[in-house]
Length: 295
Image (cartoon, rainbow, N blue to C red):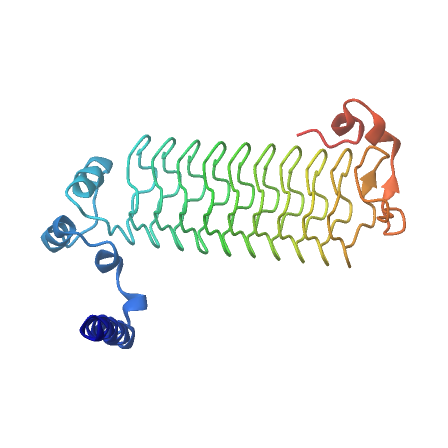
């Protein structure tokens, strides 16, 4: 037994030594070709010194094991239904690209430009979109759960019926975006900008929206149950039939927000005292039209 313990201890020491060596050599900032390297990708990377020039070349090189497509310049490229999981497209230029229904799980689009790109119904679970530019992009019905959109620009983007559960959208710009029927359960939207956005019928329960800006947003029939909205700006929002049960609105601003008796909330939450208005338009069957907030 002592020899066995000594062997285990030596193995652990060796691993720690290797880990320290990696850290000291800057492994955290290793290039994508190293991070995603396989035996095939090493050959592919060494065989090419230029980015793919066509969609066909990109797919072929991926099939041969290449994963690093950082800085790629293929605006308006058509890659619908392509299967490119775990590929790196950091700082890529893919404006107006057609990627609908593509498989992109675990891919990295950090600081990439995908403005007005077509990303309808993509599968992109656990992807990274750090500071990516996605203004005007179509991400409707996309599966984006557990993805990182920290600091991303999604102004005017379409995210209707998308799955963003457990996603991190801290500090993201979602001004004027459409998130109707979107799943945002347990998502993080701290300090995000959702002003004038449409979140009607979205599920935003158990989410973190502390200090988020939702001013002027359509929140009709949105479920914020048990969510954190501390110091959030909900002024001039539409709260018709909104679910606020169990939500924490400490310090939230609700001046000019419109609600009705059908707005579900905890008994101690006095919306009128916070500046909201009990508006007759919220009692109408088609309250969006009655309140002038049709999509």
